[in-house]
Length: 206
Image (cartoon, rainbow, N blue to C red; front, side, top):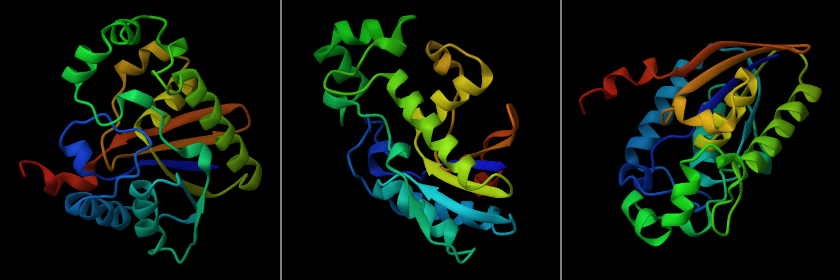
């Protein structure tokens, strides 16, 4: 199976650099443009199924891609973004002021086991996201599948695939509206592409 992992397009919260977890924020105008560019870049891919997080920003991105293939988007709750609890909507400075002890732990080596106040651990995100991948592989052993999801979901998945500790998620970056490609066969997973934003080149300097 060839799996194309896609991060949703931009929202106003992303643009303002606010912490964004499960708040159901829609794509902004620029995010809708990004989704259109994503769809155009994937138009000739032989995509057999498209899965999405239930959040509006991911679902709108997925539906834009699906429209080029005559497919219905299949929603999987396991693709939802990390529950960031009390961090939702805060700037980094506000997190530092309101939750200094958490921030210190979050920046440490044991981040995988440190739950967001009122939210999830990275380990929880990784485990449920991996279960989604396993479910998709059971349904679609061959062919190409797209899954539209979120930052922490994608980063924790790549930590597992690359054999990295979850604390090393900071060494990876997956941009808004970027896509990555995994070739999955048996126990072997090949990273065929990572954080591809070539379809957004017209975005540079805007």
